[in-house]
Image (spheres, rainbow, N blue to C red):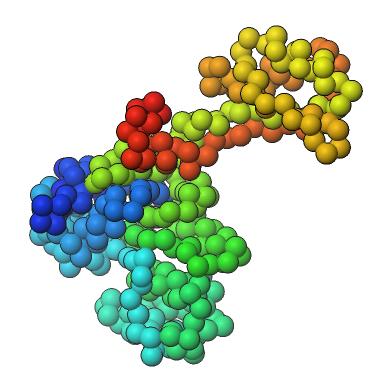
Length: 319
């Protein structure tokens, strides 16, 4: 539904997006990540037709952005990081205005506005001027205006910024429901949102794609991926330590006594593959009790830093 082919965007001598190629299909929720100035917002503005590429080609639902910008905009719902609105309008009048601007007939407009009011939970603020709303509600109004014409494409820039935990959960649920019939791109700095909502993640830096994979695959690149924590009773500490030190497939990295006297052992596999079954079996053979155990799946912050840090040597070691 969205295709970018060798897209470059320059501002004078500065290259914001550098020969970028990307495809987003129906049913995908793409997390678009990168440090400030990486080119994320510029890319989203080019997809939506607000900016034209300096070179390359962008198509949306089969339409060329440069040749058919109006048709492209009909298929897109765009929620920018700072969503434009008319502050003196009430929420209801603003959404009716957007629906009318989108060309919806009166009968369709009424149902469309009712649908987004219900899905975004705006009933409590319908008759309030937008300028009186909290930041969280303003974000929700911004999301509602992007959805009112039921577009095929959603471009969402920081959609959960300013929302409380309950509101974030509602928006995540809504995005998961919408994904079946749409292609969705979410630009965010909140990495937990990528894990919660996205089927795919792209990390961009200096206008180029650095990584493109599922969130789970990116987590596997984290230094803490598959780190195992095992809690053992105090009286079995010495026996457990001997077991772990004799296991060739693990590296014991830390042993710490907890406040209740038990010991937490931290270890990671030498080959970056799961070692849980081997550890459980080895402890069971020695009749050592496991009080608790959990595995670190990895941290996107670590991957993000490793591949976008100004320390290029770190990038190389992470790859």
